[in-house]
Length: 430
Image (tube, rainbow, N blue to C red; front, side, top):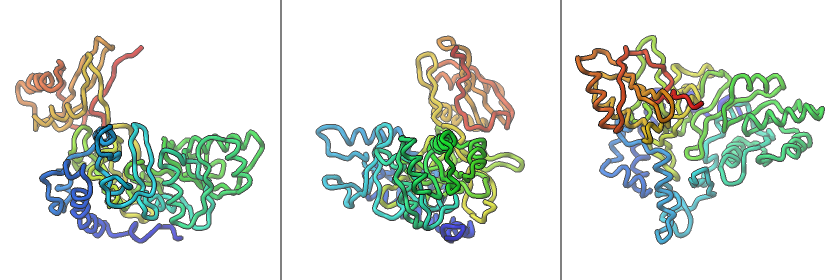
């Protein structure tokens, strides 16, 4: 293996965009014809016309709660069984899908995810190579092998680059440590916190593992402080951003500058509560934080504009390692900022609807303050030019959309924090 998984990573960006847009209409049309869910969600859309980023952005975002509701409906007694809610083009005997799935996994919800038959179905191999793994390495995989797909995701990626895997799974710290001492793996895959536990236990027992030099971690935050802690103990740790629904989304490289987006997905950053991509930043401005929306170019489990609920932002420029794909800053929080105010839920989509009615408002943030049962809402709205009575009209719209009274504070553009928050809960809970 070389420093790169394949030549796709170093493509001219224009050629990548050309290839992505060439594949996009077929992927959308396939999702419409092979899955009942997208046949309904994209009803009236001619998939072959989705040949541009703008056309893709015009399609609805499908968020996890909607996927869960469709899956629940597909499991109701007396109904034709469809545990995937109509989103999967693969299944097993008795389902509408014509082709078989290799495995089925369950995530909290419960949400069920199929695994297709293709090698490296979750596309993790690319992240492993970027983290320094090579053919012939033994990998100690401490991700779960039951219910959730994390263990299989890492294992199939490792096999794709010629690695051997020890299926450690979760827990059993002392047994896993014994296996590490007996087998001497070169690398680790799992959560960063469990790797820290293993290394701390080794120190407690007076054991050393100089052969363990690399790790690909995921599933939780990987702050620089923990990365440095591992490095001080001889382990070079890298992170990847993946989900059970879409597989690999982005991965870290030796440059340590954000995460490079995988070649098998299309990533958009949209304003929370909407499907609208964040605007291109003007000179001197940082890219806006928003929700990560992913389109998976997979024939088995096609997901078109899947809202992950995670916040991130585009990182300008290309990776110094030579990889030319889009980069994102990494995980910056959750986009689902629903708040309960005076007994009623207020959603980011409602804030988006308020903003939509006023073109002069470029960005807004609903701040909920005070104390529980005695709280108040203030919509802080960035406005280029405020006409007389604008604040009052926006206030009426707040009441119309949310059924709650709210104050309005007009702000100059750029005054709101660039953290992706649409609703800020600043109440005191003490």
